[in-house]
Length: 278
Image 1: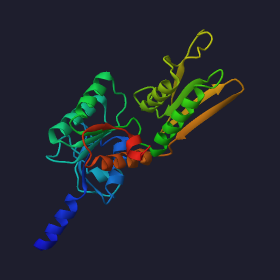
Image 2 (image 1 turned 30 degrees about the vertical axis):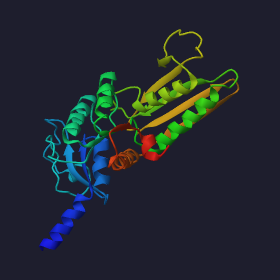
Image 3 (image 1 turned 45 degrees about the vertical axis):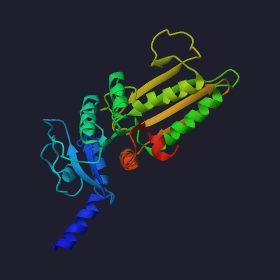
């Protein structure tokens, strides 16, 4: 290739978002690879999995159900990158966070099941690098969260108040329960309505339902991608706000949008509400 063309190509490639997918062999990781590989603003530099994964050594494109892309799935980090999208595990997330701090790269954390110790580490990291913490990267879910926030604020002062129940439904392979999205919805409602009791399921003679309580119910069936329903129930009427995904592309495209949003941002803990301007 002539030198001028090589330089132009190098400049074009360097202007793209240099992205690493962490948790590349998972359901969401595969869709991130598929969508990211055809995004003209993105260059996927790494498709990472845990050491010993059966995905190691496979072409990332082929493994994700698309054409070969010449990128091998690995457990070794590239030497430089702009941003990581993490759809792994709480432990894997901490490993990715360390790599981002080392390389001064941004990170989109979409992993759920995080505990207080993980959240504290993320909070500390956000003082040094841009971090987007997103229990759910779906545009529809985050708009739904905004609607739930508005509804909860309104129901706080309704005479007699409203009982709140959150029902979430996911595939049989999901390991954490309730979902991170359900927990986030509960936090939003609790803050707006001043509710301090959170109950996960009910069994036996539990007695009359306390009013100052949010109930959570987790359903695990088949290959359900994800559904969340928030019920505000009053005497004689109720309001339901429901968001459902039909495939994983909503999560993948939202995560890529978050990664693009973080480019050039100062160190801070961001959310999908920031990404979407909500």
